[in-house]
Image (tube, rainbow, N blue to C red; front, side, top):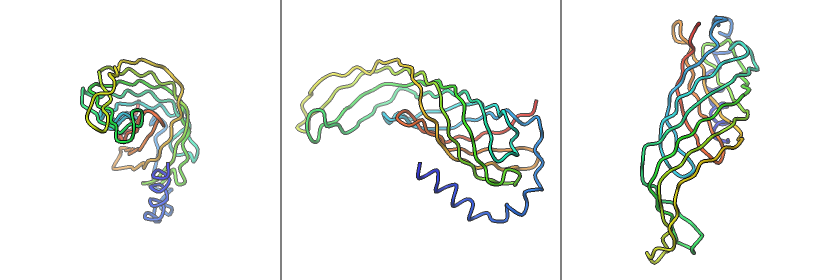
Length: 198
């Protein structure tokens, strides 16, 4: 979360001219749907891609915004190796598998200069997360011997927080959004999206 706050703070210091140009941006009332794609990683160090859609319940030129989101996260099969303390100092978990996530939720965003051509924002909210993990793995002691097998098959649903920060920029007639987003204890991702008029 400190990274998100730092990005928002630095952005506000680097782009002071944005404040003077707030009235220059015109936000179309129909710009409520944002489609995005990006990449991220899970707590098990699986790396994958994220696709998302956000529907803004409030106009994008408001300081405080509320939106509904739906996103999917998928990783191809890959090997992961992590330190573990289950079998003594120096033991590791080694596994092979993949993960798929689907989350739907509501988030609120705070943008200090919502009408500017470039504005940072922070967001927070809650999501219902459904997660599927499949694969296999084992724990290895520091001396190299196998301690125990550990199947990676798991399916679970839970509620989780959503935190993040981003930048919105209008380039020509199109609104773009670069966002860092984290579901603590599950995944983090960076994505690029654009507003769709309908």
